[in-house]
Image (cartoon, rainbow, N blue to C red; front, side, top):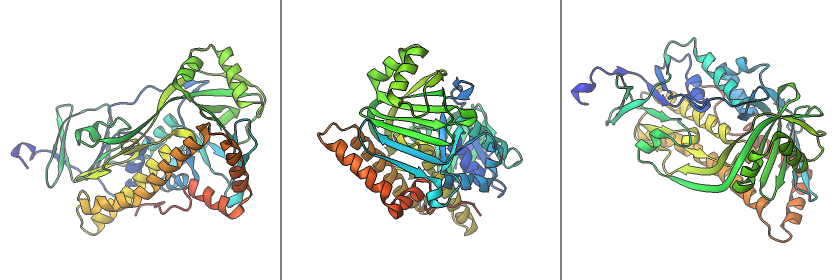
Length: 405
């Protein structure tokens, strides 16, 4: 290492990105004596809709267990809405399916949480750990890779050196780009419209998802009887919906969703984001690991993106803790390949499943809607198969550590 880096602060881990996934990794290491630095440039401002964050996440039951084990979930009590049932149906055609937590002996399938609330809870849980430092706002102005360490400079001033740096800085990851890692990409040429709405009737903890030709419309239960919508549409139609006034938008939304909860009587501010899927060509390099959206992004039709990222964080945390326990270099490819091999089956199966669902429900092939309806009824009536699907979807049966130690 050059003489100019001899004065750098030595830390155990550098995390680039202080969003939900990066903070999950830090929380997994809380209380273990790891010196961790989190570098965050500063996220986009929160868009409020009827007083709630426009962006929400459905945290599945298995990941709730992980967050409880870290202590971070304690802050979410009273700020999250339990999801006890999910009802899915196929446009106007016959065929639907209901997933109920009671079918797998659980009190809930997951929780709906505002992204900003979850991020705040993860941050608050780290406040008592003096070994974990959040640099916010901060930018990396220099990064150098060496055989034994990776070194960074923050805002031209502080210098850090660590055996491993982790990219958790989102789908447009700066760190991934600096590392020369390309992505396989899929542009759906669609946008997802998000907003908070108020239905006439209470949702009772039930999520609804209707598949239409252009994509799904999800109506998700939130606290105080409100709902969050995620409405996928082709770009042109999405732009037209975003240009409508509230009255016209409510009319279009009620026509699309139907009277399941009575009329939707109020909508808050709307936002839209492009729908893309991508997978980094390399999840790891010497001294580098990618997690969350920096590694992979998927279509939001099942709301599983952040859950994949949290599982990345927990598996990586366990691997590097084990490496230190056995006196291994946790930035070496031997250790990082173990993380990659554990995570790829889950990542590829979820990404493949989401692509398959998208193709299945947006295809206009004659007679396909009949087969879809038959398939949904068969799954709905296949008790054991349905339970296995639900346990996988909720992360309860996946080999992911619930607690790091």
